[in-house]
Length: 429
Image (tube, rainbow, N blue to C red; front, side, top):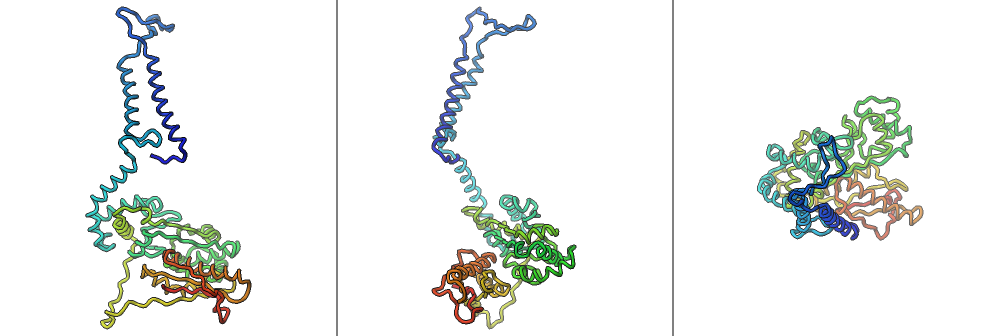
């Protein structure tokens, strides 16, 4: 049953349905003539053909009328038992939603023992199991194939999951985090800042990084502009930064196309790629965690998964040592009047990102400051925007926004040297 937005429509549909049934019944009744008396001939109508074929006004066959009346009785019985009259659910109380939920519950109960077995195994072990791969494939076709294709080869704007190129990492933990919580990859539009010629120069420099055909003179001119505008995310050598989902520009993998026109469009207009978290898409099913586990194993086993790097064995004296202490704080400095993070600021934030990634329960406090020059109101807004810029860098690295707290200091004007006053402080709570 659908939810109506107005109380008029359920009444309208119910009245129209019942009037149609009653009207059909009345029409049939009006067309039912008396039975012919013994020896009585049917009335001859005006039409005759070839002298032998005649059009007679015979009564309708009783068996035919019985069938028609039977369908009307069946319709009334159906409408009394099942949904069909507006908001009336029927005497049996059946709904398609209820049947679906019952089927899901039965299926989950059936597969629960199977899921429990796979949950005890790591991702790489599950990925090698044929039965697990079959289940994972069905989950992939249900939740992922609409964007990544049934063969997982992707399309323009949707990554190929069968190669070894990963925006956020291809190890089991990274893949599971991507599938579970989703990703939001944002590249700002630089067309206005670079201008038409500058955009083309940077595009040719980017093409040169992967050995694609390019204009050498333009690439040389674009190298400096790349360092000023792009290196903070894509790194000075163009190899990218997985913590932020910034693509590696030195390989030959292009999410939105690798032609000069496509690269120019990406630089000029920016990109905003969003992958929804499957934990939310799967709802509250009791086997959700197991499904995410199996789906992760299937994606990992498509061919591009990367084994988690082995950690060196700890020294004997350090076996019982406490876990590494959290970084107390990180300080990011900003240019005069600017709220955009520099490459140095992003590097300074990395210790916070690394600790928060390894410790899912850790929370981060952020406070923004400004120097003593300029309007107080404008400076207060600038300090807030600087803090938001750091927050956005954290969320881009996969840190949930719910774990981040923006704190306004009692005094937002930083003391001492103006260059040191223009800062944002991030600390682990």
